[in-house]
Image 1: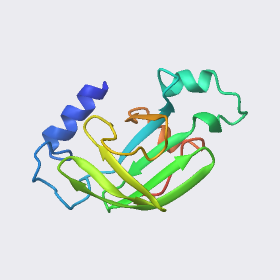
Image 2 (image 1 turned 135 degrees about the vertical axis):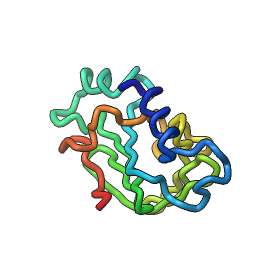
Image 3 (image 1 turned 180 degrees about the vertical axis):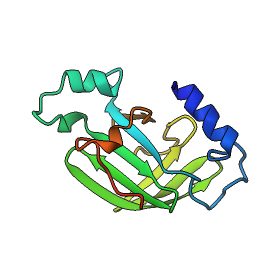
Image 4 (image 1 turned 45 degrees about the vertical axis):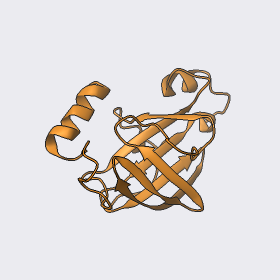
Length: 139
C-alpha cells in the first residue's frame, strides 16, 4: 500500500483526523509508527544500504505513537519513552526530556525536531517489528 493510500485509509476509518477539533487532547485511534532517516539520504533503505555500522544503528530511527497515549523513540540502539496527545493534527508530548511535535498526516515537525537532521515517514513496511527498529510495546 502506498503512503497516500495508507493515510487515506486512516482518514476514512477515523483513525487519523484532519479536523482541528477531532481527537484534540486524545491519542491516535490506532498504534502508528514512523521511520526516520538522515536528511542526507533519500529513504531509510538508502541509509541502510550505505550504513557504516554492522547493525545499521546509524540508520535506526523509529517513532511510535500508541493508541494508549504512550510514545517511544529509537535512536540507534537507545530506546526512550514518554507520552503524547493530539492537538489539531499534531502529536505533542515529551519523550524523556525531549519535546515532540509531529504533524501526523505529513510526518513533518513544525517546531524543533526531536532528532536534528532526521526526516520522518510513515512506517508502511513494518520496520518497527524488527530488532533493528523495535521501539516500545504499545500494549
